[in-house]
Length: 184
Image 1 (cartoon, helix red, strand yellow):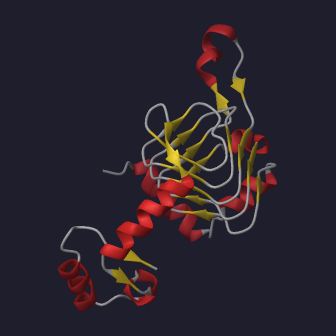
Image 2 (tube, rainbow, N blue to C red; image 1 turned 180 degrees about the vertical axis):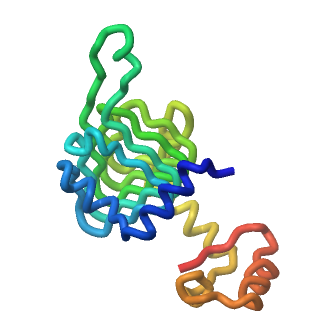
């Protein structure tokens, strides 16, 4: 259940046409082309100038990117800060957390719910808490291509942005006998 604060924030952003990336850039955030930020993503506004994101990056719902860690503030009077750099063609799965000081290479997939505590080299698929390497990106993509060949696939007309009909939704569920399908 959403808190009152979350609901108020959503209303404020909708009413004032809040542009998160524009506001972050005013605070020094750097982002490349084709950055896709899905709902409820939180990018550390108070230290945005420490965060750089490359081209063709997707941040799934509820991703958090942190450039500071205040766990030492109460006891040591200092807050730990760290640069966060994310390469090109990176997908960060839902509810993942990227901690301060992390560099993520290019061509990386981070599984949903992961906590990224250390650097990730180019071409890796990682998942878990803390995130660990699962396989190379080319192995992952070959497995998914094989899976796609055996599963039903659907065109863009089957998406919310194209106003998918109730009948089409039912058809998708009927055709996905193994529980999985792919959509453009």
